[in-house]
Image (cartoon, rainbow, N blue to C red):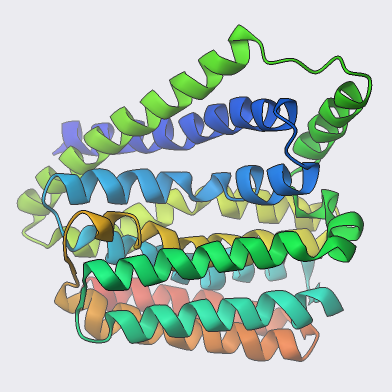
Length: 329
């Protein structure tokens, strides 16, 4: 048992770190090829924290574990709202929400979540539904990129950390001076990151299967709880650091982007290969909690401020979810 727990932890760490390496290479290559800094920032960097979820779900699906992808996406979205936002609010005492988030991010998150819930309401995700999810994400990306005014105003605020913003500005300056070129190091980062995601995902799933057999529980329960929590740690670290830097909008933007990606892509891509299923716990507990968490998040957003007591409520609700999913109450 301890062996597989160790494999699980190491594989999860490899997944997260490999995502960082892949982003490092992809960012510079994207800028070098002429992509706009906003496109690189929003599409490549800001979604980098969701790559572990996608890698794990894709590997699980290819290995025939059809209930993993949806459970992981649902669990990650629950963790992002209840745990990440909850901790961020408790750390920052309160969280102000900008007008641009209310006008753009909240409606998009609402649409993505409703679409996802409708599609999985019958307990499965078929090929046409997966294509619909991916099409919706493509429309989402194109819409965000079409907002030139926001691109000029909020570009840097959408990047998850101060280090990324500094690096991004440095690379943009190099491109202006025509000194930005693709190097062997960039390609190596990209390749090593991709390979690390594949290997980390494989051994993570192997450990999940072994632990599920040892504890006599379904892989879906591990996916919606432990795996989802582990793959949401990057969002937690990024958001808490943003709060400590007095950048609340950035902390929330990270959660919005990640949740839309999880609902539409983390489920959509694996669904291209086979029909995805939902285990009983994900269907009866995960989906209602995800819907409730998203609803509370939207209501908090409309009020323009998330207060300390709301952050505490989010954390209590997440604790209830974990206890309920393992059947302790």
